[in-house]
Image (cartoon, rainbow over all chains, first blue to last red; front, side, top):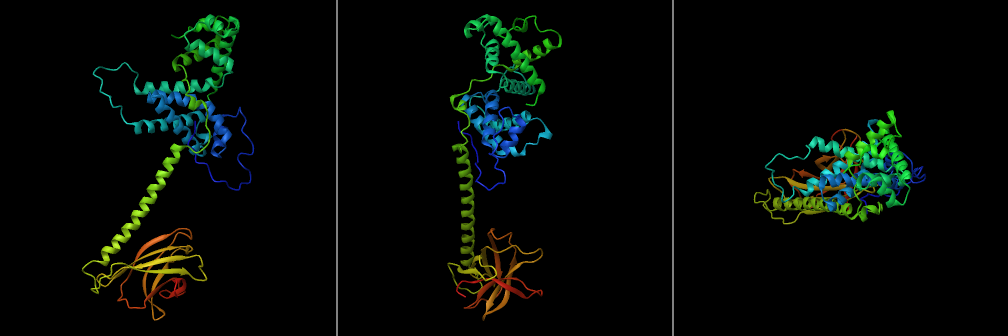
Length: 202
Length: 207
């Protein structure tokens, strides 16, 4: 995927921003700061951490994978453009990124206009109201972002346990692992997830 | 269907730790599965300038250029209308404006300007001055455009300011005089005494 970026013209700088690559375990706030200095590596790390939450958010709001993919592109372009405006003292990086991504998605939604076949429902909808939808979206954002912090082997068993419909025995058989190992990884994955969500530097 | 917390965690975690895991479990259930990325999204950001953004930038620039072109066309159209207005003071018909090219003097060598003099209307000679390369003046001082007759500044045609050397300025001035053959114009800095022209900063190219 190509992200919309306005690559700055080269300038003489006392300390080139690309000189020191960002640490892979740098916090989101640190990465945002580096992105604000037009550091591409920081942007790629941030992209890896947030592409699924952004895509998930876009899918929820737009309901179409093509439009959602475009919205992701626009959201990351907006992040690149406005990263220098992020101020850590005003809030966590995750919340700032959520706002920028949501705004880009809403802009895309407005440009798409209402669905051609949209009709007013005759009966009260069982769908959650806007406030509940907003809360659900933010929970999904936080959890999907937190999943990126798990070890791949923990994440694999968590995703299979929660969303594949398989029992733990079936997950063990599917992965060719002892059942005890699957249970241990599930517990450690949940524990790490809890820590990340409690830390909430997202 | 969501898995049961007790089936996943068993009896090993207890107390506060068990509640932490339960909270994470509930959030996982509430969040639902993360989306499967499309192949394009999986590729990651390439950091090259994206076509979409590029198109927008190009479109924005094209719109600006179009607006600038329309403005220029509007100035010419207005001048043409003025030149052909039946109430013109001298009764002459001038279809095209007279254009005078001006260049910077020794104190403003990079300055350039064009002065378009439109046909008279009710005793006024509207002029359009486009200038670039003049330095910004101190506060409360202005450049002044002078009608030159017999080689000397003869009458003021208006004052103007600039924001800086790199900022082009286009403005409308007026010569409320009966122009004669051989009349010309210069642009001056403010003089030491009020009302007197200062040093010339723009003079006709042919001068």
